[in-house]
Structure formats: structure tokens, C-alpha cells
Amino acid sequence: MNHDEIRELLQAHVDGELDVVNSREVEKHLRTCEECRQIEEQIKQLQNAIVSDRPAFRAPAHLRRNIRAGLRREAAEEKEFSFWPIFAASAAFAVLILGFVYFQTNRTSHEGAIVDEVIANHVRSLLATHLVDIASSDQHTVKPWFDGKIDFAPDVHDFAMSGFPLVGGRLDYLDGKTVVALVYQRNKHPINVFIVPSTESGETSPVSTMRRGYNVLSWKNREMRYWAVSDLNETELRQLAGLLAR
Image (cartoon, rainbow, N blue to C red; front, side, top):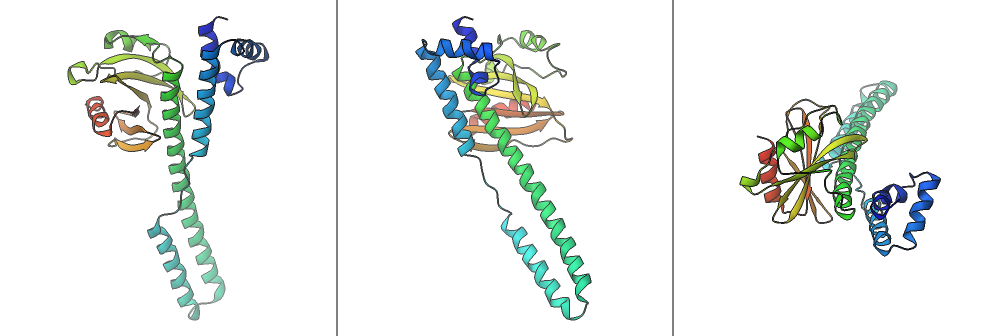
């Protein structure tokens, strides 16, 4: 394998996904290539940062207040009712509340994990110099390139007249699915826009998250789920989201 082929395998090598033969080829190359060793170290540092920065979630204050108030009401009524019906009602109430909290916490945690993965994919595309598979500002060239590679047709537009020229596109992997990654640019700031069919109906406005210096917007539009990520400021990133939502 040549230098470029080895560099494409570095992420899989760090993740322990290569077979024995390819893994040995990569390790042999790393012993003599300073550039690839630096990229390998950057990938490891990124993985460590993602793991150490995973968010912890706590039930909202109003939900905790409601639980305590409900338990106090049950205790006050204990004088008028027998113990076991009250116990059963309290237990059922607690199960429902805990189920709700568990669902909300898991959902929030899942969304946070996706945001981490979006940022990791963005950084990896810059580190590995694999920003695009098809380099073109012509939407009529980029969109047909995805035909036969995915089972949905993404909208592809060039917004050069609005200050967001299309650089190209590639296939990427997000939340266990193959997704479309469209790459735009704004004053030399690369922007990755990930697109995948939405599993939920309806449309949503862009929700902003900032982590480790990167802004991430997520929204749903026309049965598609979008994530836009860049070190660009949130105001300009929202301008691009507005253009994509038209």
C-alpha cells in the first residue's frame, strides 16, 4: 500500500477494526512516516476528548419538584385511605415518572452523542485531507454522484451568490447509518452538512450546540434530518441553514 492508502486506514487502525495483515502494514508504515504518526496521535487525542467530555444529565428542577409534591400529597391522604392502595398508587406514579425521566435522559444523551459524532466526523475530514469524494461546485455534478450509493436523494444546491459556495460531497457514517455529507465554505471556513432521512414526521427549527469551539446546528426539513458543523460563528451558520431549508 502507498502513503495515501495507509492514511485512509488510520482511523480504522486506531479503532482496532483492521485485519492482521492490514494492521501490520499500517504499523510498519508508521515506523517510518512522521506525518502519519502525527495524524494517528491527533485521532487518538480527539477520541479521548470525546470520551472525557460526555455530558451528564439531571432531571429538570420542575420535574423534581413535581415528584416531591406528589409524594407529599400521597402522605397527607394516608389518614383517609388504607396503606396498600396508597402504596400501589405511589409506586405506579413513581414508575411513570422514572420512565419519563429515563426516556428523556436517554433521548438527550443520544442527541448529545450524535453531536459528538458530528464534530468528530468534521474534524476527521480535515485531519485526513478527505474533505470530499466528488469535488465540484456544480450541483448537477454532485447530486448524480450519490445515485446508487445511497437509498435516498438529497437536495444539493450551490449558494455561492449568498456567500456559501459548494465545495463538493462525500459519503460518511453517522449514528450507525451511511449519510450524505455536503461541504460548503464561508471565508475559508469549511462547513460539513450531514443529511439522512428522518425517522420522525414534521419539521423543526435549527437547534444550536457549541462544543470545543465548534458550532453545530440540527433540524428537520422535508422528511430529512440535517446537521451543520463548523468553527464558523453561529449567526453565519444559521444563514446557511436558512438557505438549505428553503
